[in-house]
Amino acid sequence: MSEEEKREGSEIVGELEALGQQLAGALRALWQSEESRKFRQEIGEGFTELGKQIDAAFKAAQESDAARQFSEQVKETVDKAREGDVVGKLERSLVTGVRELNQQLSKTVSSLQEDEPPAEPPASGPENPA
Image (cartoon, rainbow, N blue to C red; front, side, top):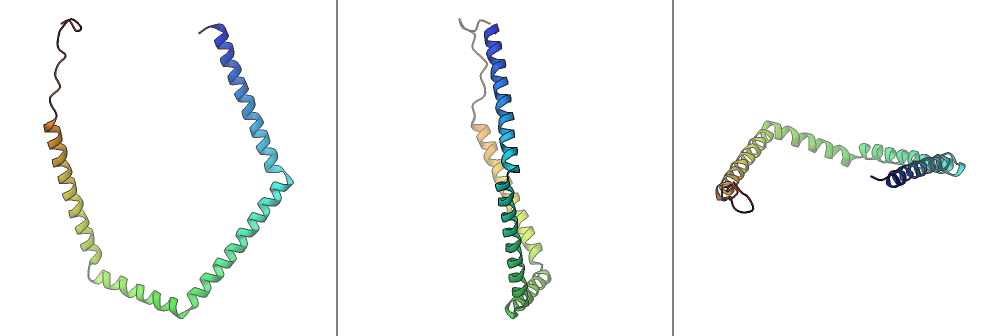
């Protein structure tokens, strides 16, 4: 590498460092500005109000008869599923299915590997003398 290329390379690094410092300063100034502070405060207040409204909606929904009935139905369904070992049956079926998939994939990979021609050693000739 010539001296000029080294100098240009170090100039580029210096300029990139200066750019990084300028960007960091600009972001810092933007973050600390009065407008930014007000904007962040408004966003925070908006989220606080949104949280209050969501909380009120959840409380109202929990108190409704429909919500209580739905909750009872869910509990009954879960209890029935436990009694009937639906989860166990589902798990066993899933294991069987994945096992079969693995076996089929293994067979496919094996047949593909058998179909590949064996790698031939390089021939000796004028380009590759032995």
